[in-house]
Length: 386
Image 1: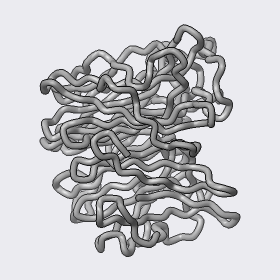
Image 2: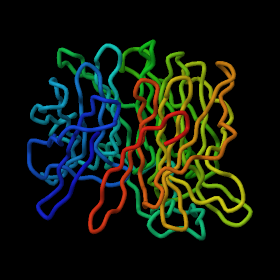
Image 3: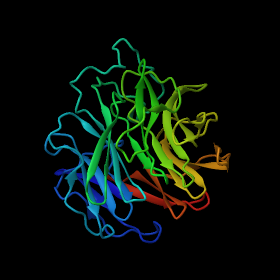
């Protein structure tokens, strides 16, 4: 588990390790060696990946410059090495929204949004004449768009070998300015990076780019679904991907829909069985019945023979965390389970969930309010039950 905690003097990143399948956790350990080094928000939490080592990445602006910082633990999370910057320290511009993965060769993969070339020309897909689709009846704190003037933002990927040698590549140019990224690797060592791209004119759709040469180069991004969300701003809500043992690539994401009573965000799912060349038609994951709520912030994991998607959505007591399973009747037929999504947060107000698979069992964590602070809840899901 990783999270950030903020006090008057700044924000730090912490990690805690469970050796019993998330039943209990050890004492928290501070990851960042420089006090107050972290800067976080809902779409930019610290990220963790586990292989032979544990690696944590976070965004920092302590020096006044946006940097992606990383630290490694080689002793099971008891201590972490001094942090290093994932890119050149001399870069200007904004960057963040990092994602992290470790492949079967213990190579560390990171993807992030980067504004190092923001002054090399205006964004090519964002004419000022475009008008956003403005949803109605939204929670103010979870509005599905942020109206701001976006400068050019590209997406980068870097991979570090066990010997410490690094390789960086530009994945795509002129992508959505502040939606989270997602990186994953397959059993055949194919690397995938997912992000919200900007298509003409100002359509903010999901895209996946792949590398079949260890991250040296990436193919042109593939559009996952034509969702027709046109907006002159950033939804601040990106995709999540994972790759199964059969090399199927799974993706979940939010987009805007028109329901009978309102315009709202919903969660969709798709998959690719040909290494990201094509994707199945999108399928809605959250409850599509009458009274369904605005859903956001999905995360996805392959858990045993199923895929688990978690998200938060509006409800009578505020945001609530929900979970749905995606099942397969054959390698090329994945569909959301027929049962209604499971509510996880109960009476709590829950936001920004994360999910991982522990020996095929999904474990979900989220942020909840408690008295005058916030807490991190962790829940192990067994056969669809808490």
